[in-house]
Image: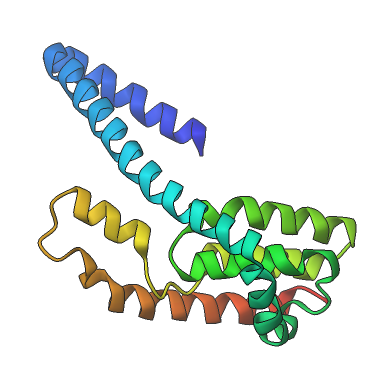
Length: 180
C-alpha cells in the first residue's frame, strides 16, 4: 500500500511541477499546516480519553467493566484468560469511537492471545477493532467540528447503522472461517 501511495504522490508531484511548481509548494505547505492542526486537536481529544481510561483503571472501574462484559465477550472470544481486562477495555474504547485509545489495549490483548495460542480470539479482536460498533464516534465528531461542520454530531446515526452492520458481518465471517 505504501508503494502505491508513494507512486501516486510522485506522479502527481511531477505533473504539478511541470504545470505550476508554485502550486506544488503551496499545496505541500497547506497540507502540512492542516496535518499539524488536525494532529493537535486529536491529540487533545485522545489525551483526555486516555486520562479518563487511566483513572478508570486505577479506580477499579475497568475491572468491574470486565466482569460486566465477561459473559457477552466470552460468547464471542471463548476463553480469554490473561487478556480479559485489556479486551474488555479495548472493546469499550472502540464502542466510544476512540480507536486510537483502544489500539494499545488491543495489541496487549493480542500478545496475550498469542501466548495462549488462541488464534480464534486474536482474529475476533482484530475484526471487532476494525469494524467496531460506534455508539459515539468521538474522533469523527471531533474531526467534523475542527473543520467547521454545522452539525458535527449528525454522523451518529449513520455511523451506528454502518458499524453495526460491519461488526455483525465480521463476527459471522470469523465464526465461519476461523476454528475455535
